[in-house]
Amino acid sequence: MTEKPTIEMSRYCVPFTPFRGPLEEATVMIVSTAGVHHVEDPPFDTEGDTSFRAIPGDATAADLRVADTHYDHDCIDKDVNCVFPIDRLYELAEERRIRAVAEKHFSLGFTQALRQLRDETTPRLVREVERLRPDAVLLTGG
Image: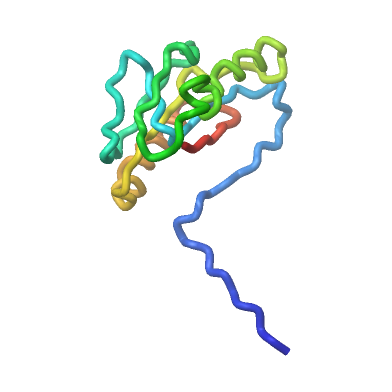
């Protein structure tokens, strides 16, 4: 009998907790790695940036820009909701399919400084998310 190879999970894998409550009672936040930022905020450094941007909860897709050169933007240039579905969240709230849109959302840009991202940026971002206490967080990538 042939032994199956084992796959070792990284100890840095994404911790995931599925949302189990009724969405109709949930405040939803977006956290993205697509390089999205508010038009009034400085863009991400496309050569590498370990910071994150807070996006106001009342921002619309028209208020957002993308600063990332490491993935195809064809669909995003037409509608940023492809990677940061803020307008779709407002529609869901209006239809009462979710309770509310969070008062802030967060976005990160491109970086290869993964250790700094893990050790410094991510803990700061997590503290911000925890402080706002959304019921559900929608994670998107670029």
